[in-house]
Amino acid sequence: MSELGLESEPEIAPVNDGWAPRLNPTQQLVYDDPARYVLTHSERGTGKGICCLHTLVRHCYQEQDAEALIIAPAKRSGKRGVVKDLIWVLDIWRHGNWKDRDQTERADGGIGLEYGEFKDGRHISFEPRTDPETKDEILQIRNQHGGISEVVLISLPYPDIVQKRMRGMQPSFIYIDEITELPDRIYFDAPVSQLRRRRLILGPQQLYASCNPAGPSHWVWKIFWDECVDKDTGERKPSYAVYHLPYAENKANMDPEYYAGLEETYRDPIDRRRMLAGEWVDRPSGDSIFVDCLRPEYHIRPAIGSDDHRAGRGLMPLKEFPIITGWDPGARGYCVTFMQLIPSADKVLWVVFDELNFVRQFSKDFEVVPKVQRRMEHWRKYLGGSVSFVHIADEASFSHMRTDGSYDALRVKQLSKGEIVLRPCPKPKGSVPARVQLIKTLLFDDALFVSANCPKTVEMLRLLASERVKDGKYDENAGLMPQRSVYLHPFDALSYPIFKFMTNPASFNLRVGKSDAKPTAFFAGSG
Image (cartoon, rainbow, N blue to C red; front, side, top):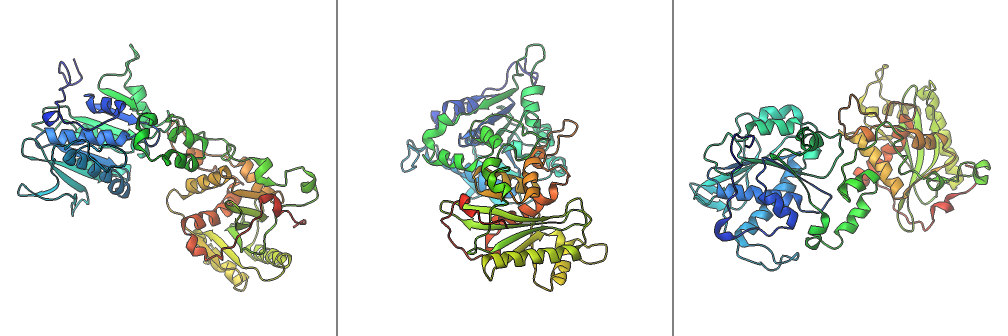
């Protein structure tokens, strides 16, 4: 007997006249599964979401007065992602399966499904409409009974609003897109509590979800691998089904260059195991953040302890390019990092060649700013004349009032008599893990080099540790969130300019040059 009190789950009837969407073998298993809760997970490019959407469309077509609810992490990703995929799936139901990946010829004629928007029973548009009050995207499907079923896309970016948005809803089918991107299990529990309330539904009322893997500490893993397992038999309860969709089954439907592009995109070892191999693996927390991507013998020039290092030689700036400084002001952690952005023979390089670090020292800004100016003058003389500088600090330097009623950015400008004008680096929500991941990516790409004459920056790359997961509560970003320590200030000074450039390169207004030099050619003198 099932959990519903029935001898078996309702059977899924075939589609009209035997027509069916063309699916890969594992996609077909997903499509045919009557389990109440179905999770599809895999590496990138497997079509896991597509088979879920085909199942949703079949439900809306076969049932009368069905309501399918699609939950997306954010409105933009939902509208541009899952809704776009849904329209593509609906087109197949209307016009037929495609014969091949090029989508130039149909293999059959579909079932002529009508979808989009209806008025007084008449089909008036193939596009979804936006509810003026809730801003939900609503798309209607004419079902086989002549009535109208609805698909409602809602975005739930914050856990606090999930319970409220679910009140009064009576979905007969739920699809949660990118479920591992959602931070709390309320995104599963609240929708499930509304399922099976809709009348006149004869087939299964199901919740489908798709995702790329996270880690075994994630709440999705706990639901579909831990809590649903019978402790006596060790088997997963029949109301829960989990499918891994292998990329190999869907390879013929993908652009031949797709996977190669993923190889270039995912350099972080954890991301590669998740996105390329489909493994569920936690991101380590409490460890050195950059330990898996920093190669000191390559990224730090010259090698620590080498003859060049003992002689005081290190990476030096090139006169063709502006000098960029990253600032992290603070009474006991003032840091300024000097770097250049250099288009080399085969890639764009960030080269850190100097630093002023006053961590653990109580430093007044009227003492620090003149030291920065003297260092700027030193590099002007070294490079033989006029050098342009670009100075970047975080937004707090412009918005956070000091105890004396002033602001760090204003103080720097006044103390330097207008020579140093800081520019703000944005700090949106999630900017800290984004900056960490950005530095990791540059190291994986061999695009960030640090002079051995910058010991505090080198020390930071070696020893900056991530936060530990607290009380066993899953936090995907814990492994990308630096612990509060003396290494946080040089990290900020290094990452602010890089983050600002990557998010808004035009704001730098840099003169783009070209250097054929390799990193090994940046040694010159003692600095």
